[in-house]
Length: 376
Image (tube, rainbow, N blue to C red; front, top):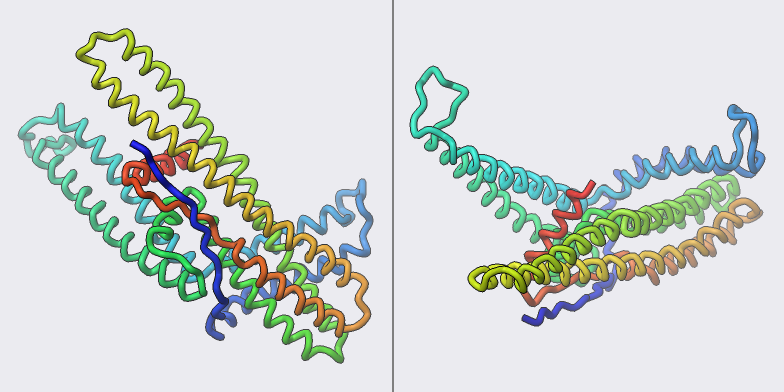
């Protein structure tokens, strides 16, 4: 059977800003962290590049403190209705996985379970009690699936509410992708960074007569760009050093299994060949889906690399300007240019998503996601 799948890139058609209350909540938590990070950024220009004295600050130690503070900012900026919906879906998926594993264990226990147990043998289970527990777990999994479907609809609405052109099937791919949490986090952080950058631009303009305040706001803007760079770097690292390696292991094992299966088809009695051929088809589907999965991740990594490249230049000029600026006007102009840059790369914040025209490959995609997550 020929399996057709295609990648659809969906983009921001506009940016619908969050309510003032949500912006205030995020800003209220991020502001003190950014203030501390700006203080460290001020210190960075006056410390040596390196120091033999562990108690003396140098640029590496200051950068380390800044990054720690920015990591805390990422946790706050990553909070959104989308991230909360995705987290709820993940918990339900994990519980369903537990239910399936427990049902498999119980079915094995049932083979040796007695029909009846004596009342005092409380540590034993009879077949009826095992059957009841199995049914309870199966119902629980069914309820989880229903709740996941509802949350997918909610996630779809939340994405569309911020201007993303995406349909339900694409959101399903996001939900069942191994990078789903990372992708939702990217979108949430990026959207919040845009909101705060717009607000900082206003504050910088208002602080026009107070160069120190204007410079401080611009420092926060500079560090917001650095947050995006750190986040993109982490995303690239996960794809290269975790997910693609695990997929390669899956492909290698399946190809070895395919080789053994082909040998069995050629050597085993004819009455078993039909079974081996069925197994071979399933093994081939796994390899094809795994390779498609790897291509999907590489394309998303390239998308992020392009976004990172665009922001990297902006960050370097912002940092240089922050360290040398003498007037607020140039800060306001540069921040306005930075906002335009963020608008240009908005489409790079959202992942290419697979749309399946074959239910078998869709099912296999989900299985491979579970296998990638189980390889620790």
